[in-house]
Image 1 (tube, rainbow, N blue to C red):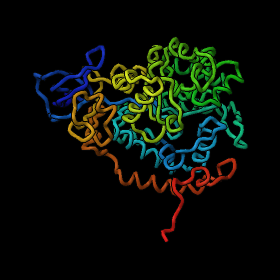
Image 2 (cartoon, rainbow, N blue to C red):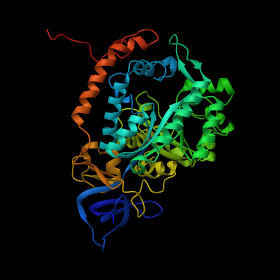
Image 3 (cartoon, rainbow, N blue to C red):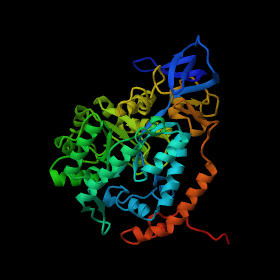
Image 4 (cartoon, one colour):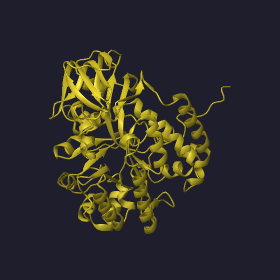
Length: 479
């Protein structure tokens, strides 16, 4: 019989079958990897008790959009610069320079760093997209993280030959081969590590995937019953390119080729018809709502370039399932909730929208709905024992009247004491139990030192990193 564990806490964000509810001075009991009881007391016997008096227990967060094998090396490189000719996006100059300078060793250093960061900030389920799937599965499995992994594939790649234009290099067979490799990966790893590792299909970007590739993706996703995620409406360049090719918005084109469905998660979907960035009539919100697809909103990656979703509340009001992701560094879902709420308030000039409740729901129930999982994102009997325990008596969390508001607007990863995934404690006293954090940090620093001198060789103009990303202050010898 599975061991029973009881958490006795002062504050619990429980689920009553309809939504999250705030339970004061209660208990959560789980047996093995499954929650069996939530309430004021538990009349049965338990094998151990976790005392969390003065603390806050919440469901684990579901992070629906992240790239782990490169994004930490965006730090000190991609900030404060955005090519105006590419509408501030870093996709066409900065990303190729960084990615091209990296080897597999640097990519793995990024994965190790990102996984620790995810756990330390409360992500218990991650959707990861990239090309290091086997390594991500192995490391996430060892650390105890629940991971949906999608090996990205595409029919073409974008590039700029001169910093003025974005062109596309097409290879349809490479895209089909990438899809086959992605399916092979899923067949090998889906259900491993006590079913914590699962797969999904990840056609990379709407503007780099052919209609044939996306139709085959749709067919296989239905056949294998898999989630799908695609980057779409993430840049003005992409939006204009799809209009040029098809006379339709990216989302309208996906609808018309039969790609959209409730199993599809749209990465970003931020430059849409009706937004100030597109200068195009509305209609995309309705397309998303009618298709039943979800949106993975990663506010920080756009906010650092001066771009905001217009707005989170409007997507909610349209009836779209909203989820949250981190995309790039920091892989901190707490901060993602904060940015989503605050940016929406600024865009709409209304403090009463995109509330703490709304973004907390997106990071829990929204993510679960997008994945088709009614056993995640909630504290209720029958749900998986994916739980977070926050300190309630810290500078950030005190005074504590509304735990959700305090977490969304004030908490930092240091306020998260314990992370439990599948009934196993994986973070205790703020420390990832199966990782050497100092070693992970040191390895990433070394990776950065290696790639920075190599970036010029992968930039269209052979610009060194100090030209692409000047230091905030000039160097000084100290004399």
